[in-house]
Length: 99
Image 1: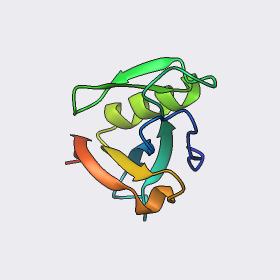
Image 2 (image 1 turned 180 degrees about the vertical axis):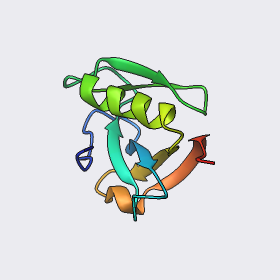
Image 3 (image 1 turned 90 degrees about the vertical axis):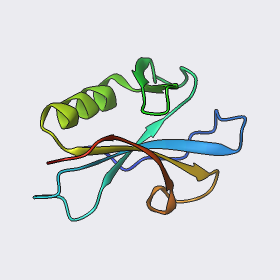
Image 4 (image 1 turned 45 degrees about the vertical axis):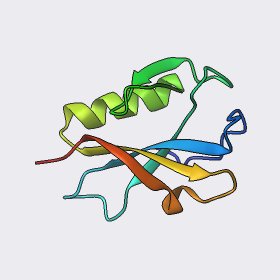
């Protein structure tokens, strides 16, 4: 299970990034994974997202995203202002849609 994301204090832009994962057949709501535009605080696994930028996740979170992609789940890059809840984040782009 992917833990709820916490705000990432490393962003100089005033934005925080999330990867949302959802298996529509079993997840009533997306699960949010905190992502960082720079490798900080144990976020060392890189992911090139649908916007062409590289984001960093913890090794466990990166494995969860890879599993979600392998399982044809919906995976999105989302952004929020610092202090906003992950559930209020805005969709930047769709990494993968589930069938």
